[in-house]
Length: 144
Image (cartoon, rainbow, N blue to C red; front, side, top):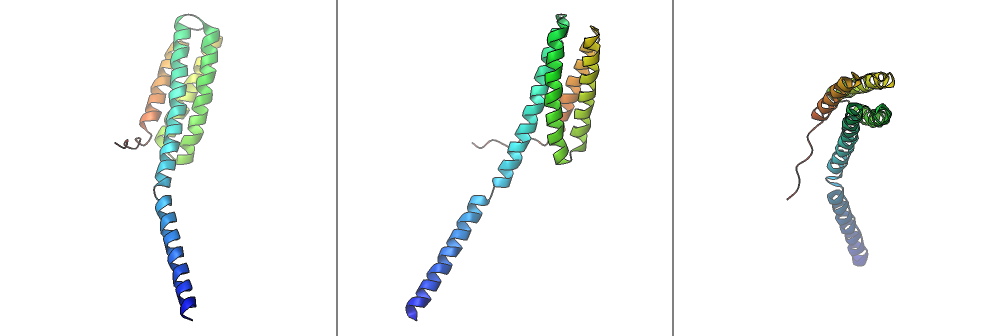
């Protein structure tokens, strides 16, 4: 009887230690997952911003074909970022991303007509992308 009691106490102790270790290991993972999602959204928006700025260079150099490709890249990255923002229910950043997509679409239309005013639309799209990035939660502080 005494051996059975020791075995039961040992099993309960092992279960408690296992549960405590599992909870300790699990703690903080949601914060890391949130930080990873935020970084992924920022990456999508930064990629869109870079492609839009590259399109502006193409428009300035009167290279409308290259500008159209870069605008398409920017629009794809923006749509990816917007889907991620919508999953967070961040209305301000979502509206800014939607505005940027609208401006990029208009710039694509103007670039297809070989119209230099597409450059102004891209500039407004970059400002909207910056507003979308500003509307995201700040990144977590870096560990020393």
